[in-house]
Image (cartoon, rainbow, N blue to C red; front, side, top):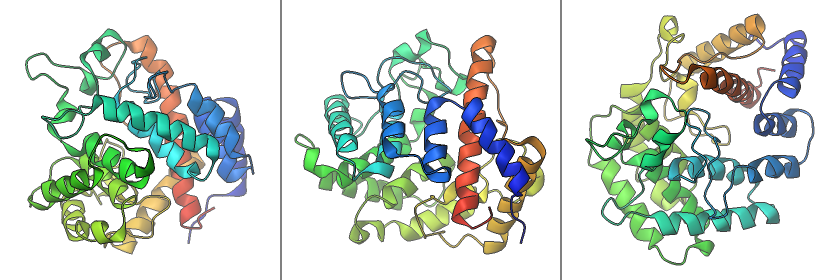
Length: 305
């Protein structure tokens, strides 16, 4: 079994502490250098707006300063790691207020970003299109609505306006009525929901998630240099459910990450922006820190360090 060498890890440790964005640096040190959770919260506070939502470029591919449901899903994703911390609980409560205030009744969920995203540097797929009244991301209801519903269910003590049980049931029904799947990102969001709702609900979408993953997963290593859904993308760091992904593909993916880290001492993005090229260079650096962190967490999960 291949493991990341100590020499490579030491170089990556130096890279993460010298070049990664503050948020990824703090999370890295929390898991690998015995740092405390307040360092992560210090960084997260920089991205949370007064309305409780998250923005300010927490998602490196769009630099929208104002809050958005998509950015808030990312903020809550990190806060969820520290949910026993009282300071994190206060931030979660504020984010809940924002989500309740921006809930779209007609959609029975949220749109990912407002149209003012176009006023800031962003990747092509985050362009708000007037002809369809949303971004192309929003063709998939579950991204980010399913993930957000999962967090609101888990932290339902802060929910005062929404019927969260009805929303969970709606999300379950919306997924289970389908047999064909085209958006891995929507399934990533449903997997996050699966891991935050109670078992009695989660079990209802387990078979559908297995079906979706079987259709979407890319197990061809020759194509992993492109932007494709590799096996590990469907496996959450804090979950033991691998949705019947064959262990040989998981091992193959882990070996691939080790090879990339041994060679480059970081993970490089497999996409780029078409416009805002100066800003893309900054975003690219931010993504390298995030992708490297995610790769290391996968290696940690499977004892490959």
